[in-house]
Length: 474
Ligand code: SF4
Ligand code: SF4
Image (cartoon, rainbow, N blue to C red):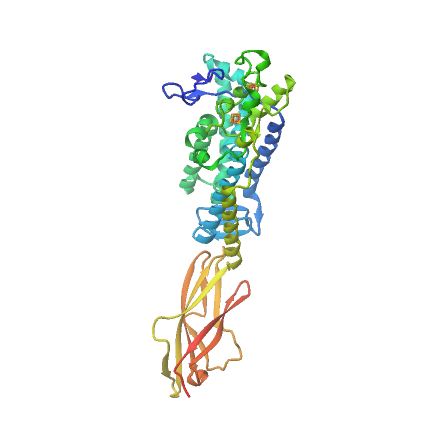
C-alpha cells in the first residue's frame, strides 16, 4: 500500500494516484482550532437531524418522505405525488439554482460543511479510526507493519464499527424513501417478505462502507458531479479557502535571505492535514473540498511564530489581488432572479393546489337532447363529464348533487352512481346528465346552475358551475 508523502507531492498528476494510476493512501493529521470546533458542532447537528427526521411527523405525515413504494412525497407538511409535475419542477429548480447561487458566492461551502460524504467521514469514520488505531502516525505505522494479532484485531474492530455505523446510516437513509414505520416493521419481519428493499438496504450499506470507509477522497476527486462543475460555477469573486500568496511567499527555504521571507515557514502542516492530499499553496484546486483544516492548522502555526492569523483563509481571488469583492454581479443577480421566480412558482402552485381538483366538461355528443316523459311533456337533457383528481394522501368518497335546493323538482341530476370513490393519488371521470323541462331555460336557451360535490368523510362541499343549454325560444 502506497502512502502519500506530503512533502513530495507530484506536480504532474493527482497526488492520490501513483505513476501507474494506482491509489496512494492519505492519513491526514487531526486538527483542532476555531473552524474545526465549529464544524464538529455543525456535523453533530446534521447527523442528529439526519437520524431523527424520519421519526418526526408534521400534520400526521413523516416530516421528510420520498416514498418510492406509494410514489408520494411529504416535505414538512406539503404533501404531493411523484407525478405532481409543477411542484417537482419548482422544487428541483430551487435546489439546483440555490446550489449554483451559494457556490457562486461562497464557493464549495456545501462540500466542506454540509455534504454527507464530508460530514460522515470527518464526523464519524475518521473518529472511529483514531479511537481504534490512534493518530495519523500510528495509522501509517500500522499499515506498514506486518500482519499480527494486534493488527488483525484493530482492523477487525475498525471495520466492525464501520459496519455498524453503515447499517444505521443505510436504515435511516431508506426510511426517507420507504417510510420509517415500514422500515421498523421490515426489520422485525422475514427478509424474504420484502426482498427488494432488503437487497437495496444491503447494497446501500455496502456502498457506504466502501465509500466512507475506504474510497473517501477518491469519490470527491473522481466521481462527484458537483465537484466537476466547480470551474463553471466559480469566478474571482467567489469565496474559497485560499492561501495568501503575496503574504506567504517567498516561503522559508526558498527566499534568498531571511529578510525577504514571506510569512509561510514551509512547515507542510497544511498539507499534512489535507484530506484530499493537496498543497493549498499551489492555488485553488479542483480537489479542495473547502474543509478548512489547513486554515485551522496554519492559524496555529502563525500563532506560534507570532504572525497574524489568516495566511490561509476564506478569501476571494479578487480579495487576494487587493481588489474589492463584488458579491452582486451578473451571475449572482441572474441566479437570484431565477430563485425568486422558482419560489414564486412554487408558492403559486401550492396556493392554487386543492386536495381534490374537479373539472366539469360538456360531453362531446350533441349539446342537448329533447325527450318526452310518460305524460308526453318535453324535457331537455345535457350530458357532462366530471373529472376528479384526488391529490391528497387519503381515499375519498364524493357525492354529487344539485347545489340549489330551491330548484324545481323537475330539474334533476342523473348519474349512474350517486357517490364515487377516488383513491388517494388517483383520478376518475364520472358521466352525469341534467334533465330539465323545456320552459326552464326559455329565452336565450342558456342557464347556469351549480352542482355540488360533497366529501362525505370530511364534510366539505365544493360547488361547480354548469351551463345548461337548449333551443332558443320567444
Ligand atoms: S501551514 Fe501555513 S506556514 Fe505551514 S506550510 Fe502551510 S501555509 Fe506555510
Ligand atoms: S486544501 Fe485545505 S480546505 Fe482544501 S481540502 Fe485541503 S485542507 Fe481542506
